[in-house]
Image (cartoon, rainbow, N blue to C red; front, side):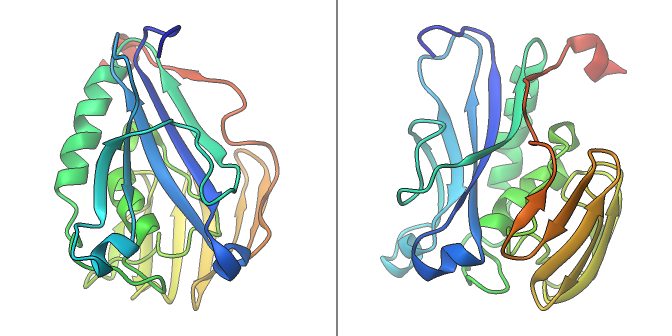
Length: 215
């Protein structure tokens, strides 16, 4: 923030702590409006609920900090004119999350359920969470919703069985929380435990301009 003045949105995912990290990841969204001096991070932290605190957290911290020692993977890097308006939509989506006082590591709702909700509400993010993001397919009492990318659709039975099809995400099949899939647009294979095998999600920043948003 001391060097980059333009608005930035970055989405990260890191292996969670302990043995769970062999199977699952924890995501967060970091935003910095134009000329802001710090990043604001949106995430859901389960242990806060056990302490009687809200698990949905909106706070200042380093955008790319390690999660329990694990280096995060950058999924989205969005910047440029028009990003400020997307940041406003992210904040609104975070406050509309329906499972604020609920947390279940498996099959959800958990930290991935929270970020997936924001992705559905803010299609500009074109969110593609990794197959290790257990909980992203938890739809609550719904059977069908938009895919996490905000485009396409998915069918899910309590986050345990389902299928997802989207241009941004590709085709995914969820079997008891284990996700298998293929992404033909950004060629990759998606596997449980291993994750995504293919090119990095955000090797270069994706620039957004007001005209593109209006189109």
